[in-house]
Image (cartoon, rainbow, N blue to C red; front, side, top):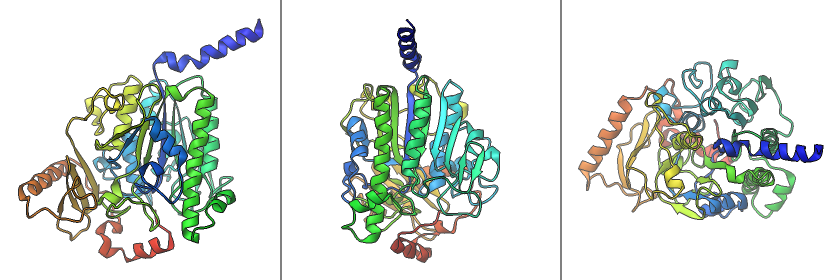
Length: 445
């Protein structure tokens, strides 16, 4: 009888999250991945079979965005569902006073409040100057990863729970380390609803990979070899986590997102013809790979041209968990579930806003107004006709330009000014060092 009772009890426990109506929430957040890097977006350098399979099982968005064109601001938006400009968090946190403000509520805190066990594995980059800014104080029950970018800063580079660490075994090749930590978290919490935020260091520098992955690309020049191997190993780590979900029969009860924090940063990033890159409000800095899947709930093998943004993840996850967002939260994202589930074909019309200090952009329908440097005159483009943002239509459409500038000005007046300055937001003409970094395959922050 004991074995039978144990089996029945195990079955009942494994069914708890299903019965609660609360799906697991899993976010794969890739760092600095070019919009067209995955194979499903046209990438050629390194095969990405696991990302491609995820896209095949759900919805791949061609017009997916991050509200930040660099690392930390995009993470603020993801974690809060609010534009990072609401708190003046336009740049990366390099010192005290630049953390995610304590008054902001994270996705982990909102999900924990309704019964989720929460975990972060990977890059935090929202402030590490004091314990109250670290993940365990921001709603996460389980936390391990890097405090920011690998190899930067003078203090400890990693964290595990409350402990700050100089090293993490396996680093700087962190993708397989994060995969192992993630499947451990999933196994430990298989009997209850969980939220896991897996934030890769890849494909940000340093461009390092395991020997077997480097060997697969030995035919490429060294910089391309290292970058391709880094991409492929990250994809393999995504596959490791997905395999564990299937083994535990949890794929049907897990809402999954895969998004890059911003556009590609390196000369060998595959950008699909987009103008610009990380650090700029051109499409190359803000348009990102964006995939959502939920087996059995979200019809698969679909491609959508609806503009979506990482701010939408929080309200979508909360809706899946049965939580209504409240007006006083001032959430800027929208619930995508009706679109994902095929109940509607289009979202209600809205504008998407972007600000990086002196740079800004607003997208309304197919129209975009972009100012990508301090001294640049805002440029009006039609993305349906000119994805590469080459032709300024301001002269032909002065009223449209005026309309979009007015929309941005009104939005910006409701935001907070940047709390600190990042000299890199002053535009390409002031970033001679950037060209040198890109040639070397390096980046800063």
